[in-house]
Image (cartoon, rainbow, N blue to C red; front, top):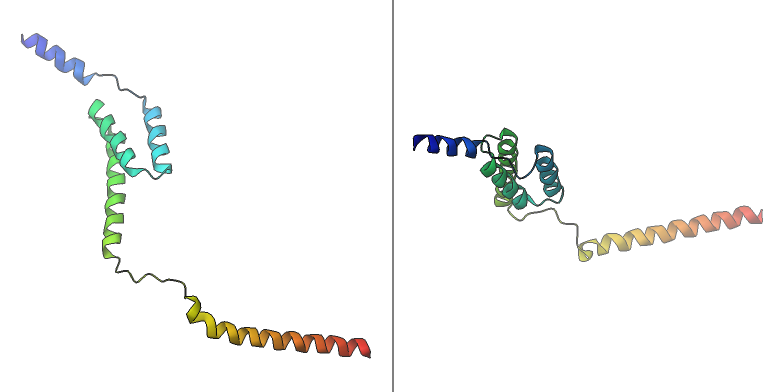
Length: 119
């Protein structure tokens, strides 16, 4: 009976993974490229379930978890004082005075051009 238990332990530790390492890395990279971090973590968990000793999957999972945690911390620290672009009402006076100066400059330019053309 002890031989059967050791045989089962040996077979479970030498289980063949569902994906090769390159397939796993490509699938992981695809999920990260799509910014689907939940799916990337799920892929790592599945890989570690099949191969608990897979250090690559463990490191990738830890990296994604750190990134997600850091993102959550930044969102928690956000006090809502984002630098928003100015609203139209805030720009109205500046735009009006800029428009006036622009029209005056264009008028002066056209007058100079006409004066040079008459001479």
